[in-house]
Length: 362
Image (cartoon, rainbow, N blue to C red; front, side, top):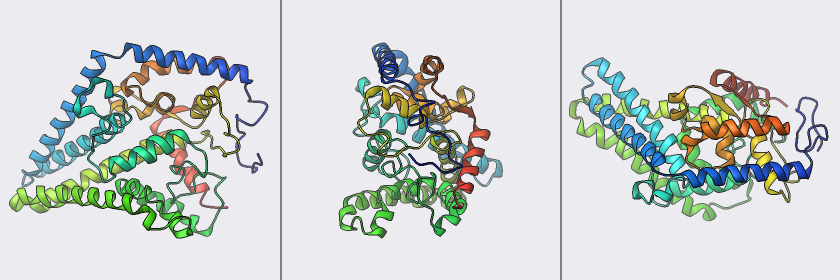
């Protein structure tokens, strides 16, 4: 694969990094065995964990909305906004994202049914499960097939042809971060393909209808219903709800972008990944993902996407297990000579911002 002078070597195609097919098969068999062992061990501990998270999320939401009704006391507005923001982060990251991967379908709890779950954000679950669970997780970091590479807005890979439009890369990224829930919702419409004429508006009518209903319902809840219930505190409640959504948006953007775009994470072409074996698929998931280091609360607030590598290897295993699984995955990577990208949030996000800035230029 031709490479620019600034592009890093790709372990999939560069002979100095390349594993033999026998090594990749053995690596894949080890990970398959690890997955089977964890699935066999699922039980009450996992159900208890997610129920505690559900209760905590409900508690933060009730407390947050209640304190916002007392906004005539300034500290109550701040505490209510932060509490509601935490509630939305837990709902989206540790509950919604993971439940919709089917991680808790085996509990047969209707609250944790991936086919029925709906979350507190503007992206309809039905659209998300197609664009994220199928398209992103199947084609991870394959430029031109994984639409999370740039979200149709940003240049996040040197394999994306440069255009003067990308001079605004940092501005677009800032806007996407601030209003991330709407960016994720619009992601499913593939607007850039409509603009290029590849698809028509009619072909996306069903997705548009889903998005419109979800955006409308979210707006009515946060910006009409709860403010009206607050009576004279309506402006303060509206401002608190808006701020809580922005807190959730910024946090989600930071965690998600640190999962696939820090320096050292690889992107791939369709040719490089054609006819992958199971071992090669695992290999690409590791090379195309990055982890974040931190404490237990940090991992919960990230939806355990701080273990993005383990999530991409085993997306249907309850995410709170990833910290345990990571020990064995990291050891196997070291033994096979496979890079394992991890670091603290400030360093990883800083490298993402530098990458966005660098790719704004040819």
